[in-house]
Length: 209
Image (cartoon, rainbow, N blue to C red; front, side):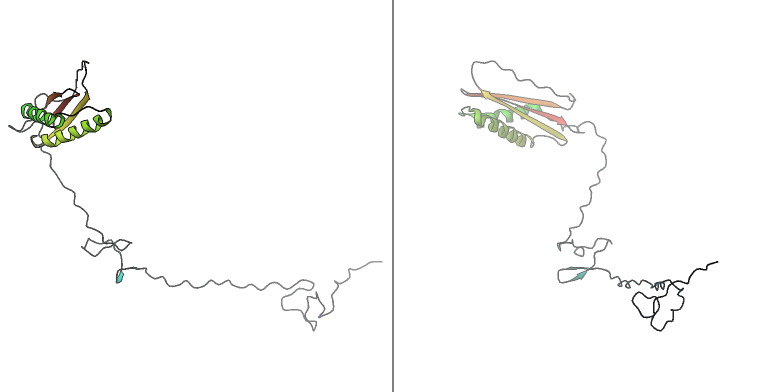
């Protein structure tokens, strides 16, 4: 005997789990035995807030920072302090001078007299101590360089050095080397000795092209 499939079981209308509402009518577009499709809803986003140009309130009123040309007193920093105008760069042309001008050379004679007078004035009656010897030599070198700057012609650089030590029965020689131009560069040296210490001061005058 042939058999035919039974129709799907339909719960009573209005019972829990029933796909049909009360009354037995199926929703529009719903197949028998299948749940109704979910209603598609268009997602909406909040409308963007109208953009506003931000301004920085500085001092008593509102000012907007700009990148325009410099106006004195019109531009300020984020901290509220005024910005100073930029310092213009100095434009110097080359002189193409490789030798000092006539009569503008560094002379060793006057420089040596300054060295001898300064050493005698600073070290006369001074006793040598290991702790103060380093500071004394450094202060002497700075003082000599400051005094010799008044004698140095333009475009000359001075290099001063002072060797200070305890005077005894030892023998000592102080030597120096320099890479220079013998036509324009020179040096001066002076020595001072007392019962406690000795000092050798040397200054090199180098022409700066």
